[in-house]
Length: 138
Ligand code: SF4
Ligand code: SF4
Image 1 (cartoon, rainbow, N blue to C red):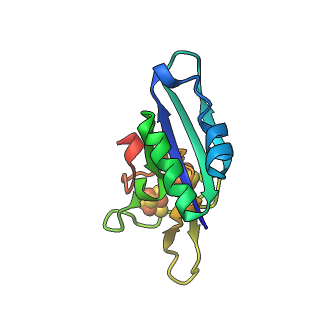
Image 2 (cartoon, protein in one colour):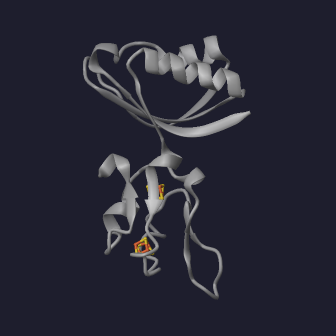
Image 3 (cartoon, protein in one colour):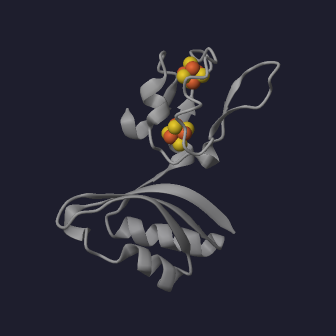
């Protein structure tokens, strides 16, 4: 079983294809849509959490790629540079999913839980030293 949060980008010529229902019907995958920007005849962007058996997951991803959908796994897209971060905490209250947390009150270190991130970019905008990088916003 695998579950990942993914940013999907659809070319405008494929924006009306039923990608998500195909993932469900043909590849037995379940998905949870977290953000959707899809308009007729325009490039679309969808953030989903996709889950299923490993093999189905791989085949579903291949199906998307073969149909011109660009795929970015959020866990691989976000990083925090601890050479820059000084643990000010400004990014914590803007994070809608608690992906950024202080777990140890002694060290007050800000931890990033990549698996919770939905790539909203709010933390990137508020960080005073640009310690957080999200490749989408690079
Ligand atoms: S806002 Fe930037 S410097 Fe402050 S805790 Fe977050 S990542 Fe670190
Ligand atoms: S991009 Fe930043 S603010 Fe948004 S969910 Fe991820 S860690 Fe939280």
